[in-house]
Length: 172
Image (cartoon, rainbow, N blue to C red; front, side, top):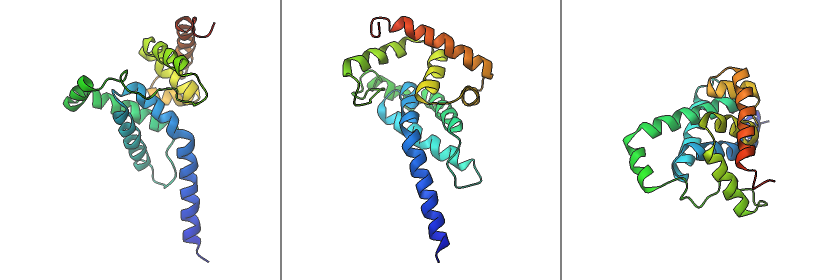
């Protein structure tokens, strides 16, 4: 029997399931941090490869590590000279892609929610994005953002309160 091939198929299947579940969440988080869609996609790809490379096994990396890597790489990108020129020609607000592209949501509602999220304080927006769309626990959020767990939980509460104020007209 060919057990090596069976192991490869199992690993491929595990990666496909992991990517199917997590790639949209990673891209959403990267879109917030990037200046254009192309940068967001590059951030996700680079972060997954880097996080996977830190492991000793062929298994997918921890989700919190990938979010943390996306955030760190986005900061590095924003500091680079190349990013400044991209920022001048491509704005995240000019992209035709929606952050919350679900197919069932009304486009106008998505744009209003995106605008509300853009108005939120960064520290709250990160936690709300990771908790709601990233589906991370407070412990994973704390690890990804390098903050205490209680701080992650309180920022989430404050972030939701801020989001409620900003979306009062959208979701009465």
